[in-house]
Length: 215
Image (cartoon, rainbow, N blue to C red):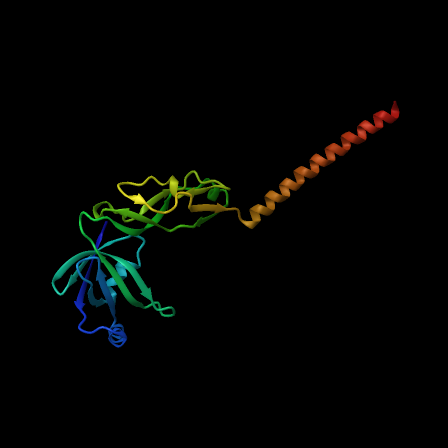
C-alpha cells in the first residue's frame, strides 16, 4: 500500500476559536490516537488532496515537527456546504498490531447483463478489513464477469488475501438492474406469448366443438 507524507505542527492551544483560525489559514486541525497519548496537531490542507480524494486506501507517514509516526486516517469531517475539511483523526500503527480499515472495492471484468443493456449498480464501495499493517490491501478487486440479471455479487464471492473481511457475507457488492425500456419489451413479449397461447387454445377448442357438432 502506498504511503502519503503529512507534515504537521503541534497545537499550542485547543478549542473552537483556535480551530477556526487554523482553518482560515488553510490548515486542518488533527488528532492522532492509538499510542501512549493523543497528539494534537495541524497540517496544511493541501497535503490531504492525495490522501482523501483517491480511489485507494493509503498509509500515512506523519512528520510532526521532526518526530515520525506511521498511521492511517480514521475519520474526516467536512463542512456540509463548502466541503472544506474541518477535522481529521489519525490512528497510530504498530507492526504487530492488527488494524481495522475501510478499503475501496474495484469492480473488474465485464458483466454479461451489462452488455445486454442492464445498469450496473455498485452497492458497496468499501469493505471493512481487519489485518496487520503489512497485509492491508490498498483496494479489493471484485470480479463481475459472471454477473447476470436477477443475481448479485456478494461479499462471500470475494476471496481475501492475508486479511479478514468483516462485512456480512451475504451483503451485495454489485447488481445489474433491468432498465425500464428492457422491462417493457420483456413484458410485451411475455404478453404476446400468452396471447398467442390463448388463441391457439381457443382455436383448438373451436375445432373440437365443430367436429362434435358434425358427428
